[in-house]
Image (cartoon, rainbow, N blue to C red):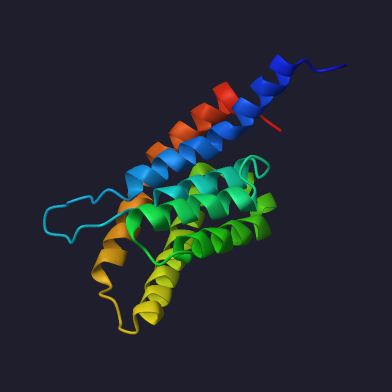
Length: 171
């Protein structure tokens, strides 16, 4: 079967939706979230997108797209250039290692997997940031970002699952 140009454009648009959604989350993530009694934080929303899509459909968010999401977050948020890009690439690689068994688990198990990955990502951001600035950064914002990210993962995963079901489809 020969594909028409419209079929190819439709397929491209459907498969690029997770990346566009990740970009939108990167933009939302760099806005400071003033929480009562907590320092201003920027939750790692693109990490949730990278985790979900790498776990469910690793073909729609390849490493160059993951790198670009992290780079966008760095440039918009004022982080050292490449810091979030590196952490997102490492997170994607870790998920790839455990993708097979983890993708077939119930949501609670995948949420726990995200919590572990988010903890590793926040520790890496804290450590690399401290090395970059040559001074230990305060851990409180990273802890609040971690907790916020873990709490936001369930509604985000519902959004991603709906996008996968309606727009992207199965592999």
